[in-house]
Image 1 (spheres, helix red, strand yellow):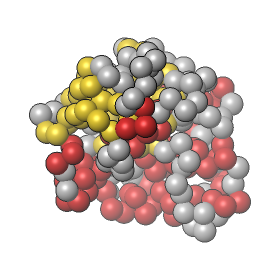
Image 2 (cartoon, rainbow, N blue to C red):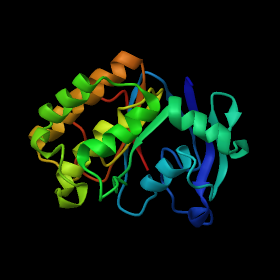
Image 3 (cartoon, one colour):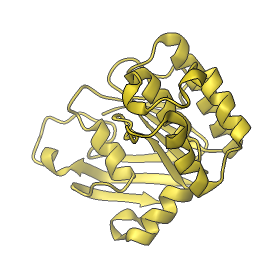
Image 4 (cartoon, rainbow, N blue to C red):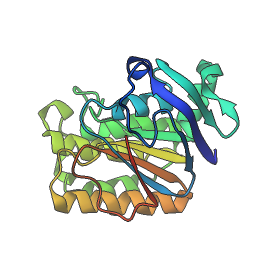
Length: 214
């Protein structure tokens, strides 16, 4: 997948609003593989909705979203399974980890399906992100910041053309945010992938090819 295109897209709940001032809603927007994008928004303006639309979890929008030339509204279960396995990865704002499993078990579940990362690479990321001592700790007993780092590692355990990051450093200090950034950029460059990150304030400290206001 080389392009994600949004044509006149707007959430159903915003469809009747005449005061929208957005670079994305009711506009024509193209996200290109290999480039980095920051989507800035005030709370309640639909940034998590945008990620849900792109990941195929919700369809309550008007307009058209294309992956290359394919309208995603026509995708079925098998299409989305293929896309989420090989073309699109996401770091959810709410993480969506299995709380009863350990940090490493959460990561291994994904990696055993995709067989993408080596054990050495995963352990190196745990170490770099300062959670090596939490590998065997149930996620329910970890802080939100620690869980966010586990969720990132899990998101990187698959091939992808685009990586969606919904407020990826909302629970992290600046140092850990910078470490996360370096890991993300390294993996995205290795794959030639695009990055679409959202923020309502603090954001990953990187040079973005384009900053969009939602």
